[in-house]
Each structure stands twice: as structure tokens, then as C-alpha cells.
Length: 339
Image (cartoon, rainbow, N blue to C red):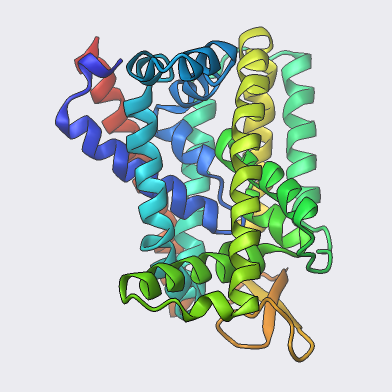
């Protein structure tokens, strides 16, 4: 795989990692959709499922070069580099844009989801009663999840580990938004805002040779939470990749139909015209967002009035569809060059 990967391919792979990282941060968007539409989903799953007994033997025996090649290391390194960069850059920008231009941001995402549905379904021809049932079930599950009431925040480390396992499903299962699942679990702000910001502030402190954060119990607790969440995410990545690899190999058509259904169902979460429902936290609570006292719990959706703002939003939906179609054209061009 790596011998045919050009410099431009490597650069675009990092950019796709940026896209996956940003998508995983936004409730309702699945990083797996980015992988699917960009044409590297199956390679991503295939690479992750290489973390197995053979990989462990190579690691224990010190054959690091063989291990790197076996797990498709360069591909994963480039992709995860983009994701990590995204969490400290693009995701921060997204936080700002969603706060100040919420309707327009959701409109672009809504268009991208519509484009993704078209992209995934256009070449799917194996429609029968089994795949249609899988489509319907996937859609119902996607819609049902989007209207569930969220739980209260819970920073118990075992629960945080479980959150990591479940939330990472958005990277491996297109249409299943890990970040929205964290909202339902009540831990979105804790795990994707506060703990990430705590790590960012800690790194900045260390660069400035300032270690006062060691005596800050809230900072230390958030770093522990982030560490456990990261281990949970890695566990989930490997576990889901093995499961999905098996399912794709033996039940590909049913899996594809279910994925299409999940993505269709996720449109309810990404619907641009909605009002955010906040929950006020008690004084001294651990997780605080940029408002200082409120966290997002869910959304109330409505039909928009026809005005200039609505027309701009519709234009951005079309723009979002165009982004996916452009990615599709690039993916087809890349595949034709390699072939």
C-alpha cells in the first residue's frame, strides 16, 4: 500500500485525518462517514484489525520495523496525526463557529450528510428483503438515538473508560456519532471540551516551565479522565475494527444497508434549524463549557421561515453536498491512477 502512496496522497491523508477528527468532535457527525466518502474506510478497518496476536509477538520480539509494516503503520501514523492536530486546532475553530454561526455550520454538515448518503447508496445494487429490513432498522435506530434524553454527567473512571469504547464507534461505524452518544451519556463537555482543554493548558504550562498545575486537583482529575478515556477509545478502536472486519467480510450487503440507514437517521441530529437545550450546572461543578455554567443536553427542532438567513442556509446545504461530491471525484481519480 505504502509503495504506491505519493507525497500528495500522504498530505491528503493527513487532511482526511483532520476531517475525521473534526467530524468526531461535532455531535451528529461521524468520522466514519469521512473515511467512507474519502475512500479509505476499508483500509482503515483492515489496518486496525492488524492489532492482534501476531502484532503483539512482533512487539515483544523487538521486530519494530516488521510490526510497523504489518499494521500499515505509515497510513495510521499520517491519519492519526491529522486527527490529533484537529483536536487542538480545527476542533477549536469549529467550537467558535458553532457558537457564533450555528445555523450555517449545521447547514454545511447537513449537506455533507445528504451527499454521503448519495455517495454510499449510488453503487449499492444488492437490494432484497434482508437489506431493506437492515436499512429500515438502521434508520429507526439512528432517529431514535437522536431523540433520547441525555443522562447526568459521570466522571467515574470505569464509566469514562466505557464512554471511550462506545464513543470511538463514530470512527469505525459511519452514521453513528460518537460525540452525540457522549451527549446522551452526559459526558460530552467533560471528555471532549474540559479534558482536552486541560491537556492543552498543561502542555502550554510545561513549555513555559510552569508546573503549578500539579497542585491543581481539578486539572489533575481532568488529565486522569482524559487518559482513561483515551485508553477506552483505543480499546474500542481495536475491538470494533475486528468485529466490523468480520461483519464486512461475511455480511457486507446487510452491513452496508445498515450503515446507509444509520446515516439517514443521523439527519435528525444534524438538522440545521434547531434550538439548543442547555442544562444549568450547580455551583462548583467540574464540567463547564465556554458559558461558564451551562452544558448542551439536546436540541428542539423546527421548520424555518422563508427569509434571507434560510436561503443562505439552503445555499450552504448545497455547498456541503458539493464538498462530498468533490471528495468523491478526487477519490475516483486517485483510484484510477493507482489502477
